[in-house]
Image (cartoon, rainbow, N blue to C red; front, side, top):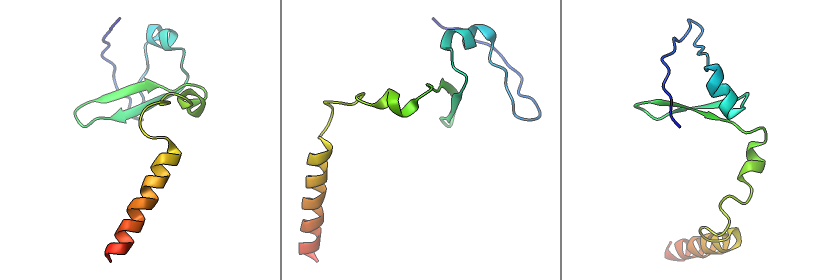
Length: 81
């Protein structure tokens, strides 16, 4: 589902989000992301940190493994000095 709306930015920098879009996303806060060639509004969940818990589980090294690797790298740098 995609829709396009042309909105005017007020002198205070405000933009109204169309009612149908607000209803679809059910968000009362948004994040404004400046991507250089465009601006993106993303709905912010009520509990953003809670939304991320477990999202990346199983991807990449565990925090313990990453910590051990960082310590190994630091020790190797120290030995080279």
